[in-house]
View: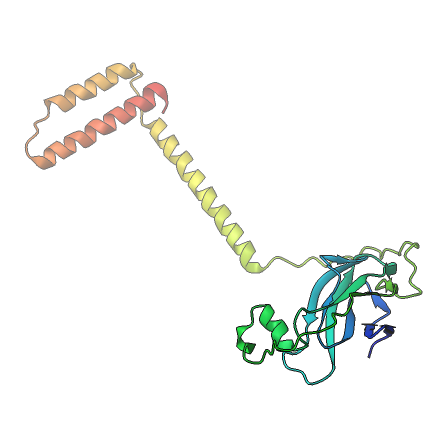
Length: 259
């Protein structure tokens, strides 16, 4: 059902304007339809509507032309628009002009479609009959349409009064799972053990000194002389020699530089 239906007649042309709602919400859509009833053999030119129709935004449209074969003496042309509003308040769609003119050939719809490139209906087009008197062009003016776009809030909604803010709510702190505590204590114990081992090793290396009180370089030279006098025979002896030499150099670095 349509809440708005306006009918208007100009000579032998009949205009019917209908809308499914007179009042819509800001989030709703409005369907507006212009229907023209003309005698057979007329061409209807609706207004050129782009992305907007008055204060509304056009989100869809459909143009219904007369059927190719029709036995009735009047034809129906229809243009439908699907509209949306961007703001609330009273909206006005001003009147527009619809032009109705005559075709060059006879009143055969098949001939009119053939003129537009539809070759399927070529056999049904009879061009032997032409209009002796070409009807004059008729202009029909659509009525001015008034609509009301409302907000989605209730009629008694008060948006000026500040709302009360609820007091803070205490959140119960969840206890940490026992497994997490066990993991933390385990990691701490491992770190403590590593530190103790490093300190003990360093203390042991520091105590590995010769109690003679001689300078470090003299002690190392004496140890090198002892190592030089040893016989080296076989692969195992060579490996053992390099191990002792490395240990001697490590001790010298520790005694001399403390590293």
